[in-house]
Length: 235
Image (tube, rainbow, N blue to C red; front, side, top):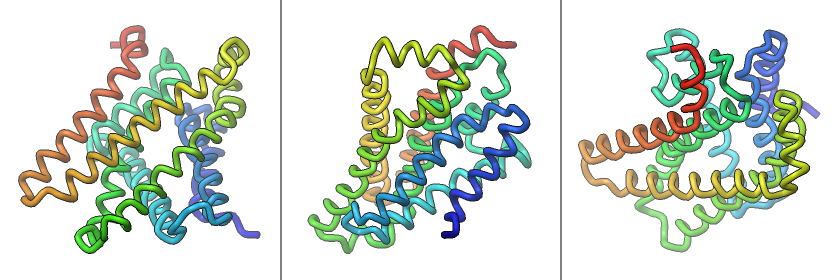
């Protein structure tokens, strides 16, 4: 069976970065696991509209790859929240957990808003209340897959890069995974609300203001996540 092209592209980058000891591999390894688990859930018919979820998954990944290419060509061309995430991987004081959460924050709190608007805008006005609820239900089911993936990420990605995580895992049991899962669930709920506001905005200037607020919100969260690394790292 051929490997999915999105997963294959991620894996090629992970191999390159792991070979070079590049901390960017931490987030992408997590994202690759999540993508694989999402594809399995789609294949198993876990969503009401598997075709829509599959398109969402691939369009979402496109935002990551396009943003990465922009950063590699000229860091200033990448969205500020991704500039922060990528730049922090160069800080030797940044923890692998910070690098992971910075990538998750940028991809969920910024990229996912844009992805949802791109997919929902052409159909939004024509969707009935029941159809909108079905879209939201499929969107929310992803939370369950995220929760199932977090323990795998901790065992296979974070603990090898950050051995102290093993002690945390043994001391807290499932509590640490639960806290991260709840945090991401809260972020994703906020993302849906942001996307709905953008979809319902009637004027271009209103959409521009809302999009600026989305970007500022994601950037503020990113600065909070990496605050410790920046305090102890080079100025």
